[in-house]
Amino acid sequence: MFVLAELKDNVRIAPELFGLKLPEAVRDEINRKLANKVLLNVGLCIALKDIVKLGDSIILPGDGASHTEVNFRYIVFRPMIGDVITGKIRSCSREGVHITLGFFDDILIPPSALQHPSRYEEAEQAWVWEYPLEDGKSHDLYMDIGESIKFRVSGEVFEESSPVGPPDQEVPSGAAGPSSSGAGTSGTTPQDANKTPYRIVAAINESGLGLLSWWVQQNQEEEDEEEEEAEGEEQEQDQAMSGEEDE
Image (tube, rainbow, N blue to C red; front, side):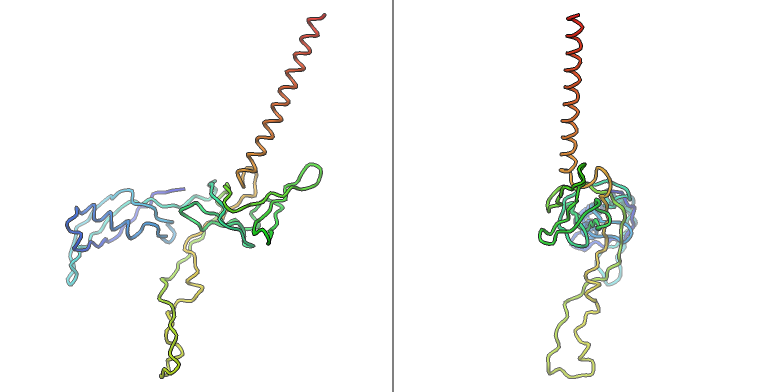
């Protein structure tokens, strides 16, 4: 689920940080720059593991800061395809079940990857697994918000998102000039602003996956059945032994 990524960057240390030791200043700057950020095709950056190599520091003309080339290893959240993870249901929609891990929210289980058959209850805002019973009927198992759920990672999607500029400003009604109709646009469309840089696609359509409460209940029922069978066998053995003693 967590991996070590080997990265290289040119780290800028502002003059007010010159009082710190170079490794300490570099560590703080790298964490400030990368922590909780998504790197394209790398994953969600969590924290700096260690610094592998510090290059020479230089000061560029017109800039009082120092610039140091640094090789380092960073802890990154990027689960492998096939990993089984436990999270909590954040919300449900017609798109599927949205899962959160607390520090990462962009996990989606699409309808095709839910237990079959399932349906979406609009009034409850929840997906329901129509669990088949032996008598041919079904029992509704709701996927409620906040429930713990175990899922398998089936895919990942990285998208390059553009920086979001300031909100568009309206042009005064009396503004003149041929370009007034296009003034105030930031060049970032709403579609670009809503892009998720990294999201995980998951599945629960196999035995043992889904809400933990489903399988806890099933395991408890199986254990109860095994205990009843064991008690029955013990009673049969006791009866057999008592019959032999009578003979």
